Image: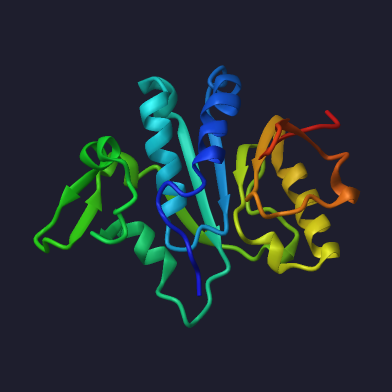
Length: 204
């Protein structure tokens, strides 16, 4: 079963804001790919964080592509993300300041909807990472959590090569802390912060 939550891995989120955003903020647009988005909590977390840390002009030019290889036993990820409806339990870990700024009440007291400003920043398409073909290129930031660990080493390397190709010059990759980075792919990225899985594209 897919597992995700809002504001998971706070150290990695902090690194995105502290390390990646200062460099990305000089660009005309910021193009993010969340690979393995499940029901959307992670890409919407990124949208909320960027909204609170970007100026309005740059946020207007933020694009977040959320992808997953949807399984038939799961709810439709696309519909969940398009509607941006989450239960009271789903938003439990959302800090108060973000909850008040970004969630609206609905007719159901147990269901909340993200504001149009945040909801419309995330778009979803179905994509299989093991196709080894990125759905889009020229990405500023790729986030991939709790996915690579399910692949054999040869597959992990090919997916990382795909990420490298999909990133623009000096773009960033964020993985989960449990993911061991294959030695064969260390020439593709350089780690930006000790102990935190944030990497910058190298070889450019």
